[in-house]
Image (cartoon, rainbow, N blue to C red):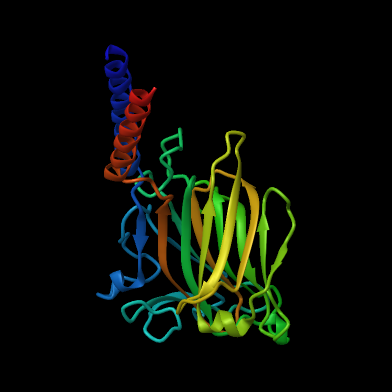
Length: 293
């Protein structure tokens, strides 16, 4: 009888420890979120307020605008990736390959990785996602050189010091053009089979990032229709993080670009109630087996 009691107490103690750990993990892995609809009161532009949650301050960088202002951003009401009627719009119509627009935003501990020992916002064991669309990129049909549209995830929390770790880019607007994915581990651009028509109709891109002890972090990038449905493409690889910021970019394109719905979602963690039920049923089964023996 003493053996059974000690065994039960040991199991209950282990469950309590697991519950405490689970509750701590859930509370520490807050999601980050922002959407263009948050700025519908007129607060969007080159110096936008920092709305949403879990992200650091915006840096809206209009580079080589070639006056009059051919590079900038605005709050769009007519894009393919509108949420609640709005999206972040960009234009970069500089001469040659000069004009480019960046919407840069760092992650913070509230929206970053709970496994990050530095205390900075870092994308470990989490998924970053963004919606995007374009009205025209350019050089695939003889437009200006250097045209590109997409986003990158970077190490560092400042636009001037960040270093690209992974990017997804679309170049050109002809039927044969694709997106390309690059990471700093392989240093190779991998074609991603997404057409301009699909980009124009609106995409949601997610990057699920794991965490390896050696610092080489596995990721899976998924490109899906903004309106829902089966993914267009899924690509897996590894990158040398930490991923600490996102840069949404528009390089010298022939049509406006659109972004929306920045999100960081933590990996699924068992709810304490579920874990408790599992543990208690395990204790009951263990005691039943001991009685039979």
